Length: 212
Image (cartoon, rainbow, N blue to C red):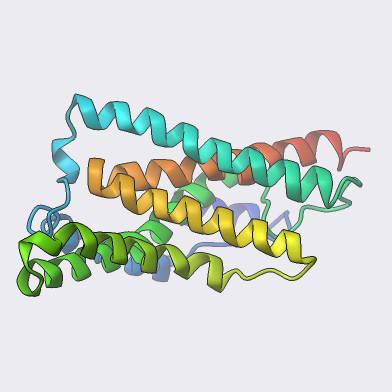
């Protein structure tokens, strides 16, 4: 749906971030890794119980809180002046829903499911049971560092500290809740962030800044 919608919209809109069929190929590891969750000591995607569903509500709020913080700092503190066009991190609504939901799934597969599953499978085989919790903590920290390091920002020192610390905190919480409630918990947390930062902010910019 994202692919077809993006192609149709690109005929009349500029600056779109498009998905193509190669993006679907990048999602294929999701299929075999889903079957390995229990072996890695992670909750199965298909067996979410009532406790996990309560976790989903909590992680959604966590994600939205990170999104609100980003909007307040980056938009209203650092860029209070109206945008004259959509910046690269925003896309036209409602296309933004399809793009960022698809993007969240791809990010969570490669930044969370693949490294956590593989490393925890290795840990199950080579790490003594008494050290499993410490090993998971190490894996969670290492995987949480990837995104904030890859997205290291320019700007004043305080903004760099803010961007790195919140990026690390969000990714660490995703790994933590993944361990407690499974892959969907990590995905929902990111979707909560994207809902505020990418989708609702995009609607605000389109409706209240670009139409001026």
